[in-house]
Image (cartoon, rainbow, N blue to C red):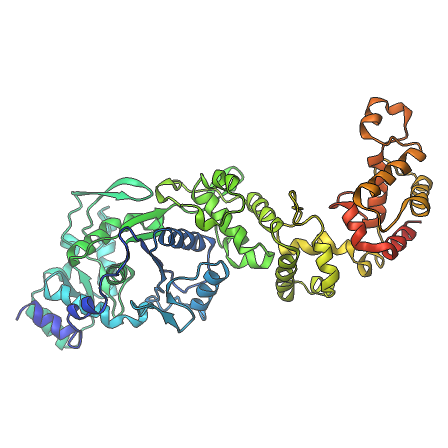
Length: 548
């Protein structure tokens, strides 16, 4: 009896690997085209780090006319959550990272290299495991959990490396005939890889991001097929990335230490290994110390946080590119209106140690993104967000025609307003424009330089009696406020006041501030002329009367 007999006994129905090599031919792509994947486990809410990986993987594939696919690694079915795939698929879709191939819902997929769910690829893994057993490069292991615990205890007592290797790999040397008898007798087993490595030898590896690294060779006889017939991550990803034609594995740098094992598996299987690019985790400044962004401690670590806050996907993508490549910020300054698709991401320019996540910077980016939206876009996106998260805002936006005028203030010009960073800011930024809110709630007017009640009433009364005309253009409107200021003893120009402050009560800016606060309850607002044009005469009259 030989290895082939053992392989046939363990996997009698498994096809020869030539079947799959033919079924999944080499991809017909242009030279230099990159094939990447995002390969998460459906075990929880999506992390911003997963989105970051996906953005980078999709970007490098797209800019080389390659392929970005979504593979679901669900071989650890005990940890899987309900609708976990849906969560991943929807998150990618929401952030405009829909893959070219792979899972598109909990049960549907597109592409010619599937199934794209590892739990549906069991027969494929068994064929390749059978091939390794037949070649004498894998073997059944009959060790019980108790025996493995005993091995670990002895290793710890002797203060040596833990693991299943060398003299500790008890089942490695079991003769084929004995293994066959044990299996026929119904003994439980798993399949282990027979590592050809030695820990006293080094391997050199060039990571696309980390650069040159070296490690001791892998000498561990890792499990490749578990007792339930499903593969471990290590084995499955090698088979999948080979058959799916992955050219670049872009993943978190917590996997960097697995490189010796993964390269060894590719080599032993006779496959060409992909290039590996290990991304440093997104970090956070925590009282002067850098740490990984944590799902447990940081709400912004979960992708769902951005939807709840109403931060546009476009802004998040812009910011993630910002932390991916430091030259993106300069590129954006020079290409203000360009799509991020035009920016060429370079993996070798990514941070080796991990970029800091800065929420203030993200919100600044988001303000710029939203400032470029039309009033119609802001309205539609605000409504969509409000339907799910803010019924008061939804009620406010009921009158679409009026709301579009409100949202159109200081929009579409050379210096558009940048007061909205997220859809959850909209209500706070526009509610004073609605009489049903402004006139029906008490206002605490915080007057500035001019704060004498009688003086304020005089300014308002004179303005409405003599100077206000709904048909005035902007220049005429402002000239009239200057005239009002002069008539009441205020400087018509700020520079006049600064040159001779004792000659005036204050200046025209202070007079216009009185009108602004009376009309809006705020000292800082977008352009007051535009605000007054939107409010209209009746509303202005009522607001001034409220002050009196």
